[in-house]
Length: 365
Ligand SMILES: [Zn+2]
Image (cartoon, rainbow, N blue to C red; front, side):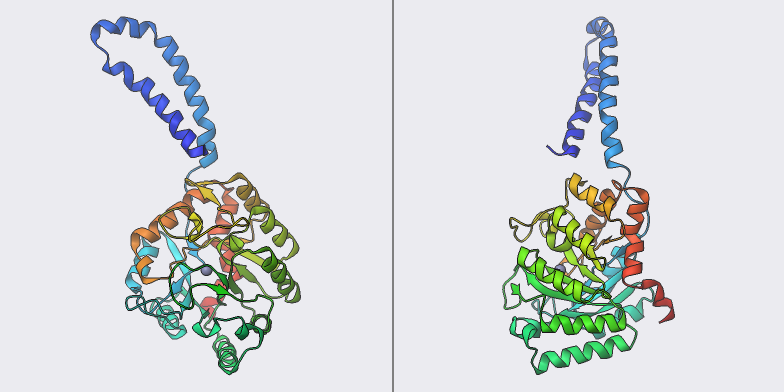
């Protein structure tokens, strides 16, 4: 049983002790009064057992939040994006254009769209050079880039040189299909010519790379090689470091000071999202919470590495760009942050994203 469910049971026991006497007939009041001492005792005992629950869950985090894992498609309603942020005290949001097609109601986006969005709402949106590109489907393009991919690399350099982009991503290395189509399931090599070329560019422009890679052990080893080869590049391994278990994340963070983790889509809410084990789970994957309570090993990991995690709502499709969906994810993150030390929570919510994406430099750009 989870802690929160246990808290719920304890609360209902206390409620029954309070409510039950009120329903009794007058002639039974004498007996009730004689039992008051007993009831008082149980009330006190129950209240004491509730104390650890309150201490465990804490108050939801109240401060501003940065959404460090956002996407954009041409069908996204910008006003809904802004409304979701403003009504939830989300002050800033990274934007990664999703070039993959998504049907007539979920048209692909572009870096140019992301720039327009950022210009329309100054200080709110921070574009990354988008890497959810159809032409990157297929490992051959990663091992030996052809002319089209060469052009993509050159374009990325040109965009970064403009100073208007704050990172590169999301690189779709290993992705599990949740829809049909040729780009749904992806199996690309992390240690490859393409990723090494892009890492060199990221180092030159001092921008982070956001990577989506489900945590297959063999891929984790390959990622280690890349991280070690480019120590000056900040890598953000999305979705709780590929939904890896706490022990694996701990090992990688300890070995690689240039590795960061975003918790994009990792809230255990709704019917989609990585935090509910969607679209599938494997032996090496893990969730971070259940019923709004962090798992103890995950909580310990967060306190051990307070400078290495950030949040993300991961709205990637027009259908998910809705106020209720966005609010649900933000609110759950607020519940989870409330279980961490206040200084750790603030780092997760804001400080780490500002540092990793150099958001404070935005005003000078
Ligand atoms: Zn992703």
